[in-house]
Image (cartoon, rainbow over all chains, first blue to last red; front, side, top):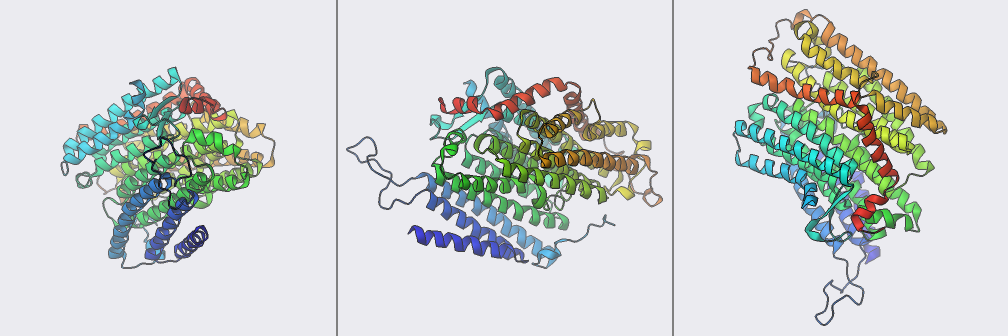
Length: 118
Length: 505
């Protein structure tokens, strides 16, 4: 499981960085989304995976007596997912607006000189 | 009860922003509420600062979950003084926006978002938890995304894409670094991390994580190879927005960097050299960029980058004098850079442009305003009794005290970029104030003259206010130096901070 996750994270980061290096704005955003998902999985992996041991104390006991799954990484990931969801939807609307103004998806076209530049 | 004072700077902006939302589409009440809110925030920041100065580090545990399990808010001298200077800049910009932000923008949630931005900044300064810092950073960038694109002009959209994409990348890198830190230690509380991180066996991994943090905060604070988004986006939004960005957003990156690299990580010789080289390159590229730009706002953007280099270098030298100098410069820079963009806004109002070849004759038409700007310019250039002078003395001292070759180059870079700053400002003074207005521009209408007295006041008063604070920092430097030195001591000896948060060492 850990090895699979490591490979998965590596693929997500690598493909995200590859996408970031493209000139298309949509690919740029996709790259950031992919790396963001990679980072979320990284938190999950580094939090330590303990399958089948929910962090619930048995009714007969008052403390944990054996290893349990750390709930903190999941809370962190959930927060990060919600935040990135909001920001990504903003970024998508922004890209659409830019496309309407420029009729281009190329980052190199983002340098319309201001009238004031001489 | 007094410990709840810590959360008030965050709450007051949350409440002001939310109340403003109820006045959607009605700019006039929003302006009044925003002014009240920022004024209250200033009073609260004063109270917090005094409290921390008299009683030491204050801690609030959210929902009374003791650290390291809950999220703690910590106010030491550094964070409370950052909150104080943020509240000054917030008040000035809120006052300026009353006349400097058009009714159209104000109808579309300018004021609520402005307050959410200030809330995020205060939260980032006051939090004592690494992941909570990330969340506050996201609050800041989300608000700033809206502010930078609000209005929807083509230039703003183009600047917005660059700003948004690089800031998103910075957040992801920051998150990756947090993941590794959590994996290594199993805690996110800054004070707890300060204890556990040095005990990790694999110190090489920690150094790499430190570099990831440096890259993440480096993008946000615009250090050398990562600054390109700043000059290509900061000139696009209205001056009030650009002022709050220039004064506060890059500085929150510097704050986080200073906090991380004094509390959690301690740069070794290799990293010190790298950071010094980066700071040198930041100063030089910023200074050279400022020379060639003819647009006022773009020139000021490059000056921001140039002066970021001073502070990053101060961090790398890592002595009390250097850290004190960097912190002092940070305070001075927050006030000055906000003010510069407000001044650019007034100039744009008067002449209809901020392009220097098309400007001129302001000394003739507005002598008092010219005098006011002169104070700001002299402070920025670091003329002796004024505010830019004192931190530079400290940085010079620290640079000379360190005998490695990089720190010699750092001092040379400091002198060179100070000279360039002076040159650039002298050029600006000549072009904007002394030169005769070009013949082509004589018929451009003056939009400042016909304004009502109240509107003129709301445009000029913030500049006077910030210039007054700058003058105070310069003329009563003893008091600010004491604060900066205390902060440097806290940074070099974080034990009181850790003890206050965890209750033990």
